[in-house]
View 1 (cartoon, rainbow, N blue to C red):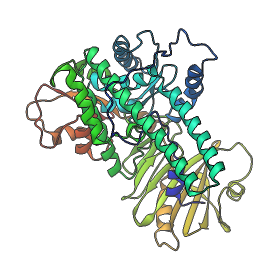
View 2 (view 1 turned 120 degrees about the vertical axis):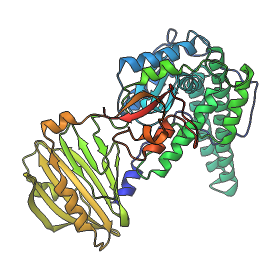
View 3 (view 1 turned 60 degrees about the horizontal axis):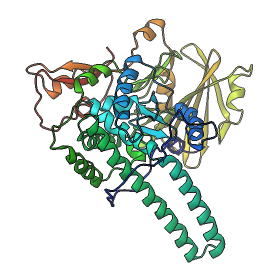
Length: 486
């Protein structure tokens, strides 16, 4: 068994919509493909259609499913519709999917498959900012970048194999492989530049604020910094993980926008956008459970538990993980078990490496049958607790460095906190949502952030979500976003 924190990090799935190693070249004379894909002309044998169709289910599963909300879907469709009319191929049909993920991401697949997460919609402050991201992704579709990149990747792979065979892993062979990889990186970089140029042009011609592109790139940079400060945040699925954003890229986007005039031109679509995301789900969805400070609550499964003060909970797709002081870590998950075997038999069935079979003890936790045990692996000790509730077995693994004096006490606190939720508790638990409020005379950043519920670092999050700079003045009558469960 690996240390828990390492095991979680190693299991993260990274999906890349676009990949680039940086921007250091600017080629203004770019143009899209002369044969863009259209849904009307696509046949079942067309490779572009097959790529999108084959990858679509995996994308949906990786990002928590589709976010089905009529108001949100209409809002995004309105933006895509306006961009389609000024795209390189107005007859290109798109399938736009809002992903049920708090990550900030958007990407496209060949065949006109467009994706945007509800996390990105929550971060954006107007329609032009969402349009800036989607126009960039639509440009990849009309320029056939996905198919071209797949072809180039195969070419580089074959060239690398040939080089290794010819040079038998010599220095010359390794240099040839490195040159091929650099060529692919430069190719990706130029794809990103093409999409930037085409995307900003689409913004301006659709009547949106063309400066939304550099503005939202800055917001995404701020969001990544906010996540980097949070040890529990997973930014691996965020936009900038697959679209690296050096400072030059913001400068280039701003220079493209100047073709339409000085800042202030174009429509931001702020009012109808904020109305459209009022009530948008924020953070974890009910099917994933909620983190509220040091407590985890899952209304669908009907269970809850808490961790000691000083721990930070991260709700991942694979498990709930909490990290704390002195290198302590806690992992919680559940498995369906319809067998008739006892919990003692389950504990000893081989799923725990380094288990001390003599340590297995039967107990009860808040009226539920449970079993505890100890294990050791490498430089770590583990306290394991399994609890049966109906047809599921819930598992706690608490890890600490070998011979830590904190392991027993920490594990005892966590296991004792596990309990079934009452019907009243489940009914009272509400998801976090984006709510739009109007700034009143006398309101401050601190007072507005104080209205937020269910989140930490309220002032920082409020300023991030509303793109408010340090020391900026608030204007009465303007609308801003807060996060609350009401």
